[in-house]
Length: 281
Image 1 (tube, one colour):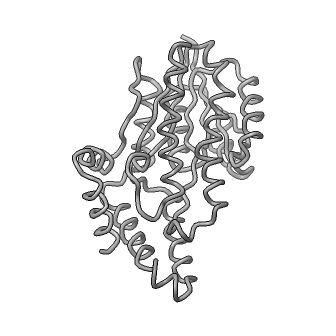
Image 2: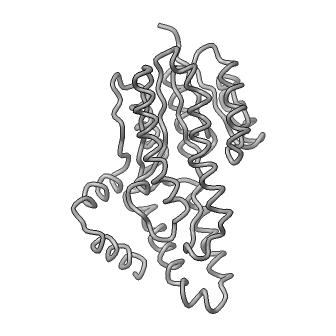
Image 3: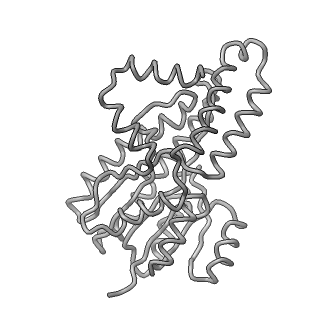
């Protein structure tokens, strides 16, 4: 059987890097995108040319559409796409700049549509599949992360539409929903939150200082209690890529399984109280 070819979008991040490594070890022919030239150089050095790397900036979905089409046209075949790129801005909703919402939607949602449009013609030819990296935050609205939450909720709906429209054409679409992941992105969020807390003026500190402190406490605790490693999430992505009949959704991580398993039995008031208590300490 011919080697299967996969495009991993966002191959330099924590989960993306783990997915690339796992697929290479499984014998897939891997093509990936990264944001910066130094990331591409690092990947090419690590794999000795076995992984073809391209630069793609998902903050401009129109350019990403053109770029991904060019990448796909350079491949012999395309059997699968794994989208692992995302950003996760955090902060109180009232204090989060509108530009942060626009950028998050462009990267986390609009570029997902661009990737779908760019790859569907090739995936139809191979009966391939797309695996998107969502989040348990697409099902549960975490306090302090409104921009990220909004995009992950939107991705849930997008994925449903993709799956229903792609299935009659022989292309399968799955969404992986991880919980907390021990990545550099989360560590950077903690650094950013501490910086922003220190910069609050007296009024905003009085209104929202407790949310920053609560987030720092909850996020730090979450990194040590139930959070998955990138490799563990990559294993779930691999399952979705290689399953003969992939599920529409995969929950990754014990924290996500616990929260998503219990949240359905809770009222909105119960959930509000849970998060208020979490962030109040």
